[in-house]
Length: 286
Image 1 (tube, rainbow, N blue to C red):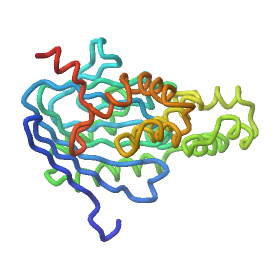
Image 2: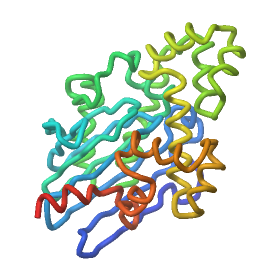
Image 3: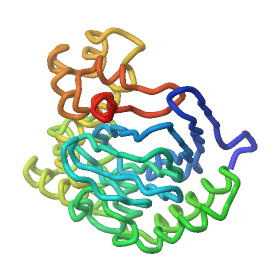
């Protein structure tokens, strides 16, 4: 670990509520597997729904606060969970909580998710309680609750993830190369040619290991870049820089992957890394 401060702490307090986000920098050697580790502690004056947009990454939540309710659609009945795994997702996810939540979140690359979860992601049916899926990881939540220092909490999670990576077997070398190329923005045909597989064979093997076809993951990577650019430039420029045909194409992707238009998505972004709030849920609740 560098001698520099290993985390950035962002705090917020207003009528919206109070939250603290701890952005921890994992060991660079874990970069192919772990994108980030984040601590969070939040309380709000009312029930809240957060929208988690589609993403080319998997998430493990080690929760030690009140359970949250995770739903695959805005209208579906959700499942209360404290600690859970979410694979790569091509639709937004809805997370409801009654006023408080706390835990540590690990954001994993597709290769990291395959290694750390120890199973093809095609076998992970959406959000799954870690107690049912990875009991060894589920036990971390109690240890995190007993630890008061946020940096130490993140280090505990980092150590557990490193141990899982160390014992994981790699998928076929062609799949490793294909996943790295697709998540770097390579086209499906270019990647298939590079690894010496047909598009059909790449599609079948990739979807089994990583949960989605390579074309879907390519689109998710592009969407993530576009979401990061919102607010820094106009929508036409976002569409051009991210490889969309035009602004209408960009808007269609946002409606599919975030459940709203690009402007609505930007408007729902809460300050100080508070995530994205479903304002329609707030209005209905009132």
